[in-house]
Amino acid sequence: MSVLSVNCGSSSIKLAVFETHGAECLFRIQLDLNGRTYDETMTEALNQLFVWSHQAQPIEAIGHRIVHGGEIFQKPTVINQEVIDGITSVSSLAPLHNPIGLLGIKRLQEAFPEQTHVAVFDTAFHQTLPERAYLYAIPQKLYRDYGVRRYGFHGLSHRFVSQEAEKRLSLPPSTSRIITAHLGNGCSACAVLAGKSIETTMGLSPSEGLVMGTRSGDVDPGLHSFLAEKLGLNLSEIQSLLNNESGLLGLSELSSDVRELEAASDRGHAQASLALEIFAYRLARQIAGLCVPLNGLDALVFAGGIGENSSRLRQQVAQWLSHLGLELDDTKNQNHGIHHNGIISTETKPAIMVIPTDEESLIARETAQKMSH
Ligand code: ADP
Image 1: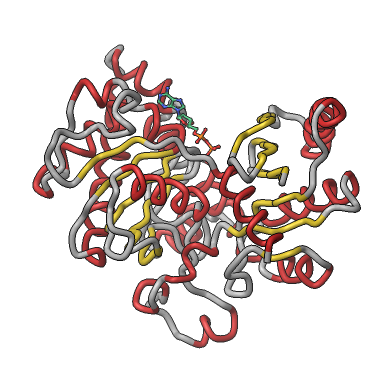
Image 2: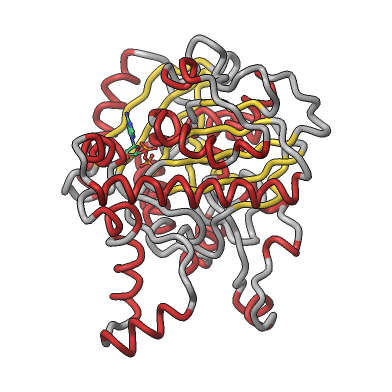
C-alpha cells in the first residue's frame, strides 16, 4: 500500500510517500517555512507531490502527525469530524502545534477527498507512563477537571529509534531497557522498558525538561511570578521569553544552532562553550534520572539533528555518565557510527548508539496497520 505521511512542524512541512509492504520510501520533501505563510508552503509542497504522483503510483492513504492527543487518543485513529473535534478540544494543551496539524488535515483532505486519513499522535507512545510519572504534585482537581498532567512528546521518534536499537542489538523485547534522546529544535529524552515509554522529560507542554534551541526547559515555577512582579511582564510575554528567547540562544546570546555554537566555541567564544556545556550537563543529569525507573540500561540512543550530528555533544554527555559504564569509541563517535550499525561505544555495556530518526516512516507504518484492521 502506498501511504503519504504528513509531518507539519512549527518551522517546516515534511511529506513522504512509502510503499509500506517493503517500507520503501518513494518520495520525500522537506520545505522550511522561511518567512512564508503556512498555507503558501503547503501549496508548494503539494505541487511538488502532484508532479511526482502523476508520474508514479497513486496514493492510497494519508497519515498525519498530530502533536497532542491528550488522554483521548491513545492510538492511530481514522479521521472524521468527531476526531477533528477531539483534536481541537485538546488544542489548548498545545496551542502552537495542534492548529498546524489541523490545518494540514484540512489541506490534505481537500487534495485527497477520496482517501482515508489517519491521525497518528506524538503523545500516544507516552500513554503507558504510570501515574507516579505523569502526575504533578499539585491539587489533583486540576488533573481531573482540566487534564493537567505530564503527557510527553516526540513519541514517534522515541518509538522509532528505540525499536531500531532493540532490533540492531538483538535485545530481548520483553526486558529491553533503552534511553532515547531526541535532540532537534525541541529536545526530550525517554525511558523505554520492553518497548513501552515509562518516563520522559517533557510534560504538559513541550517546554518541560531539557535545555533546547530556544526553550529554557525546567525552571523554578517561582520564576514566572518574579518576572511578572519585577519586570511587569504579562503571561504571553513570559511564555515567549521562555520558549523563543531562552535555551542555547538565551545562554549564548549568539545562536540556537549547535553548528554555529560549536564553530564559535572553536574560535574561543566563551559563552558559546558554556551554553553547549550546560546543554550537555542538563541532558546527562536527566539521562541518569531516567535510569531510575529502568533499573539499569542496555542502550543509550542519540537522534535528531543535534543527536545525529554532534560528536562533541555526545562525547560531553558520555563523560558525565562514565560512572554508569558508558564509554565511547572516539573514532566510531566521530563517524556517527555509520560503519557499525549505529554503535559508537566500545565493547562495554551499555551500548551507545546514533540512530537517524524517521518519524515519517513510522507514520506510514502505523497508518497502513490501521487500514488493515
Ligand atoms: P527539527 O526538530 O525541526 O526536526 P532537527 O532534528 O533537524 O530539527 O534539528 C535541528 C538542529 O540540529 C539544528 O538547530 C542544529 O542545531 C542541529 N544540527 C544540524 N546539523 C548539525 C551538525 N552537523 N552539527 C551539529 N548540530 C547540527
